[in-house]
Length: 480
Image (cartoon, rainbow, N blue to C red; front, side, top):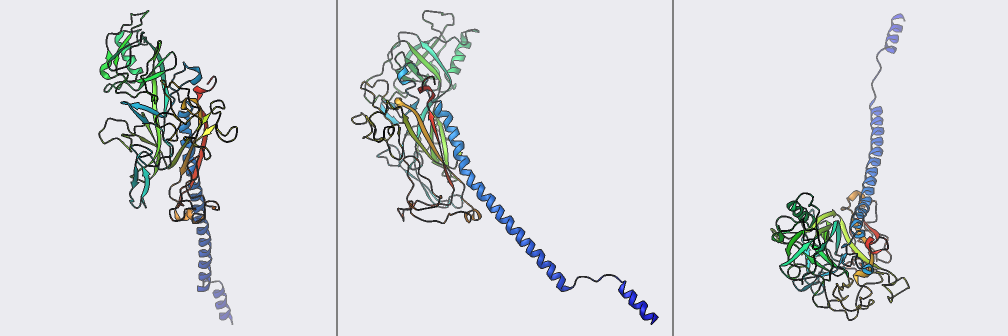
């Protein structure tokens, strides 16, 4: 009995036993359940975060683009404030003459039809998977249905008196200026300062400048590199003030005012040279390398002969550069004062904003009938130019006091996880759809119909967002 008792006590006090197979299986099962729940929540939260990121990206792109454009639109001006009734008449540029040919600088809803837009044509970006899954239709000037806008944005403006009498416009014209910024040192320093003020690049000459007379009439001028003469004298203190001497072509090879009514522009003394002006153009164009629509800008007048979409490689002509990607639409609506828009269609205030969903500039718009040149047939405001002798039509661009600019941003292609959290697969007619996955309506640019189902929008797998800003041109409002 004694031996048996000691054996039983030793057995009870010995080392603990391990897990049984059943216990191990239960533990592993519980661990797997916890991991499955945790990983499911992790993937769902990650997909939700990814969905929120793609939801915000088009909003950020659109808002950044609107902020960027607003800076230029609000400050658009040619520093021509002599005519108080039409201050800065060339702030927004619709047309200009080049070598005697009327050239369009701004466009409404590009079609790619050369009959409507001379020099334009359809442009197809071929598929190149995986970056460009399918071919993309565009035009040479910009994406289908988007606007092109050209304006003058002063960055360091100056006005300098031209010695009278002002000569007739033409090639090789001698001009003398009252310019004394560098005269505290010597004549050479003064000429160097004048070169900088006119944007001389040391190769081709000055930037595009303007001449403005006492009546507010204006013309373009560019000083060639060989046109800067060294015989200006700081010691000339009056009455001529021949401090700077240049020889410039004021008529034949530089851009000229549109002058759709014909005739030769003349300027009446006193005449001023306006410097520090920056002509800038904006458009939206899909890149043929990565297939992304991008907001682009160019320092210079939009040129249909070369901006289709770019000048040839090696050309010295300025090119459009990318500003922001995933911007798929740019729309500009033109705002007029009640007095200028009197006689328009619709409600009492319905004629104040044009190129909207309800009002597009055409031959039936106020004052558009019988205008020379393309008139309002191109669906942009008429630009009379300084030599236009008839009464200005109501919708002349010099009567516009502001713009409403709308930009549509687009997200990158939604990944599969994000697509499951949205209605990307909804396919319904436009009037009943709950899906937001198509480029939205913006001003007079409507949604793109599906080629198979014309009542359906052309659905895609992107998020879209439209942002709008209403901007008064500061130089065209009282005390602006």
